[in-house]
Length: 91
Image 1 (cartoon, rainbow, N blue to C red):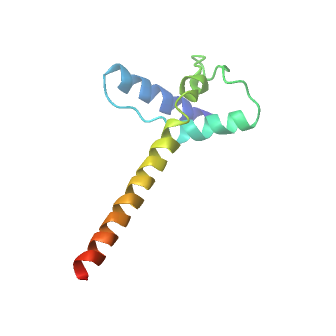
Image 2 (cartoon, rainbow, N blue to C red):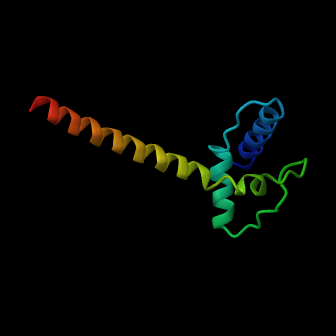
């Protein structure tokens, strides 16, 4: 899994350098979460190039669940509004 995480990190760095959107999830996120759970320091270096992959995404870890939660809340609110509107329209 380490190899896939390094490839994920390298790919995202290249996209970021090109000014394109990046997505630090998938293999990289799972690998770093496992490393954190196992008590591995976040500044550990990985691969032949000695890349610090987990520290770089450490600050992004809270954004994905926050955005997902926000989308969920938005959908629930829209659903409530549509339900109430439909009920009033039918009455």
